[in-house]
Structures are given as structure tokens and as C-alpha cells.
Length: 239
Ligand SMILES: *Cc1c(COP(=O)(O)O)cnc(C)c1O
Image (cartoon, rainbow, N blue to C red; front, side, top):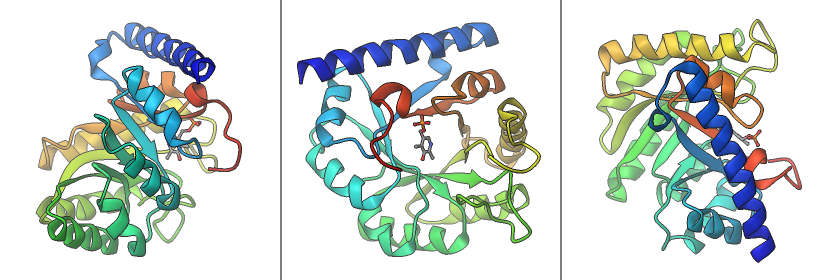
């Protein structure tokens, strides 16, 4: 356990240095960027260690793994972010522990989240997940709505009882015009955020950047980076 704590502390320090350097290079204050550690596939014990090391935001992408982990860590001062594709039949469980859902990408999900948030008397922060590589159907391979669908969905979230519209999230596309162009993808997300904030000024979260591309996200203006591998190590299985 001590070894794991040393390992996580060293990895966190490296990630912290990367974020600080990226902020300095972009002329941004370090406080403008929040680190969210993606703990998917790693045990509750790691989450506990991260909390001891000062981490305040964690993210998960599968309810089956996240629900028991969040329950085991319910005594810790952590904000839980849900970042995976979310089926409506999992909404009841996810609303039980998630402070934010970053993968809101369709109206049916908004309706289900709102209904459940009201029932559980919780307020759930919502980010609209944007698919910059959306196909003809207006949806991304890994979830997300095409840029043209943001406004309608945002208005729906803003009006939904129990939900709070917090901003936008994206995952850098592996295909399409933004493949291999993370910086351009994240700058596009920033432009979309600027548009969104005209109608919804408080929706100022911009969640972008992972282990491999957090520098590009910070340079573009992201307020939240989601880092898994660089803190916890290469995942033992696909997450
Ligand atoms: C897994 C995951 C991350 C973290 O990815 P790493 O490359 O491990 O840093 C970030 N965002 C989402 C949506 C993820 O599923």
C-alpha cells in the first residue's frame, strides 16, 4: 500500500508539473484548470489514496464499476464525475453518486436524469458531450452530439428540474477532420463554449484533454482535464 501511495504521489506530481507548465506557457493561472483523475478499472483503495494525496475530483465511465466504488468511498470529500456513455436504465444508479454527468448527449437522457434527480432530491451538474467527428446521424462513435445539436440540448438541460447546465465536454476525435489535431479540436470546443455562454453564462466548464493531450487542452482554454493513465498507470483492461 505504501508503495502504491509513493507511486501515485510521484505520478500526480508529474501530472501537476505538466499542468503548471502548460498554464504558464498559455499565460493562464494554475487555478483556472482543475484536475479530474479518471479512476476507471482501478480499485476503491486507489481512490482512497488519491483522496489522501489531495485529489478532489474523480471520474468513472461504467456504472457497474463506479457504483460500488463510490459507495466504498462515500466518506471521502470527492466530487464524482460520470464520463461514459450512459444508458437510461443506469440513470437511477448514476444519479445516486454522480455530482456531474459529463456525457449528456441526447434529450431522452436529459429527461431521465431530471426525473431521477428530482426523485432523489439531488442536483446533478451536466456537461453536453460534443462529438467533433459526428456522422450523418449527428452522433459520435463514442457518444456525443454534433455541434449543431448543442443549443437545443443545452436549453433542455437548463430548463430541467434537478439539473444544472455546467458546460461542454469532448474527447479528441480519432477519425475525421480533427484526427491527430487535438489543439484544433479543443479550440473548436472553446468556440462552441463561447457560443453556449451567450445564452447560458454560468455554463463555463470546458472539459477536454486526457493523459496524452492535456497540454493542448490547457493551451486551448480547457477548465478541466481528465487524466487516467498518467496518474494510475496503463489500465489492466479496456476501460
Ligand atoms: C478513460 C477516459 C479518460 C482518461 O484517459 P487517459 O488516456 O487514461 O488519461 C478521459 N476521458 C474519458 C471520457 C475517458 O473515458
